[in-house]
Length: 377
Image (cartoon, rainbow, N blue to C red; front, side):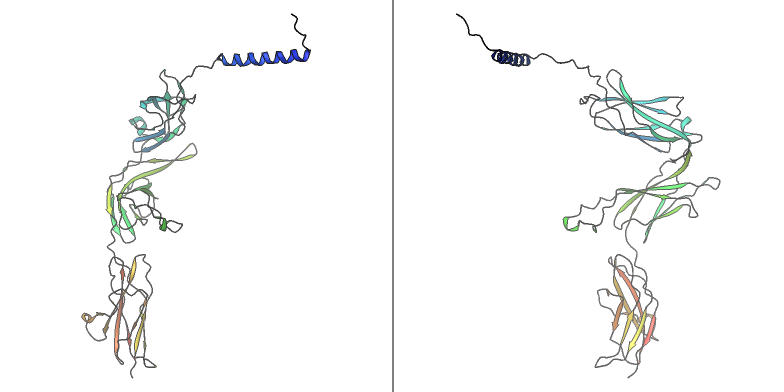
């Protein structure tokens, strides 16, 4: 039996079908592609190492990587080697080796040996390096720089005293033969922070929550051994520590060398202070007209305290003893800095004084007296 001869076009179509079928079959048989290089399992390199020296201790902190250099999640603790470098020639001297979990916050405190805690200030650089299980590493971290050398002396005698305008802090000044340096006050909010504001109090004018920690730098000057923290809020409790901070220029760069932190002093910011005494009290008498009786109008300078509630007005007749002062204003403090006294008699002379009251009920001393005579009939 003879098969019919196919045309060239038909033969090409048949060949394409065979090749297409063969390609599908080959793709489905699971033949491997190009081989991949083996993973080195190197932990990622640390890039955010920081170092802070206080006294003779250096606190290091960094973030551990979550994956290795091949983007594979790390499993189990990672060996962290810490070293410090005082000079390029000496190289990086080993300090400690830790085991830290991946994706964790790394921390270490290094106590400087006497050789690094004495002498002139000089640069000291810390590094960390992460090893895999075979002791291989992706390299040193960024360098974190502090100053070696003798730190400033500790602050002694720190004490806190409450004032109306803030917390007055005092400490023992430096010895006369010591070059003055700045003092840094570290304030910590001890009382619980205020609750988050509700929707009704949010906005650009809403009070900002107080930070849990704040620092105040006191530059050397004529007022050695004292500083006023006027940023406190009444009703809170604070804890203060202090340390001396020297500024040192090394290789053209200004760095800070901080001494040890002092012991803590705690103070409750309780408002037991009355407002300032009102000033500028003046009195003007009127004889009365159109059926109105005589009166004396008083006015004075307004107070500026944020917690001012108002004023109390006192009066006595001229020529009578001091014990005859009487409160003539209502039980509630007078809100505005003026008062109209209509309970007067023609021909009489009256003495006046004014006190200021805050929202806690603390009243100031009475103002300077003023007197006025009511015109006769």
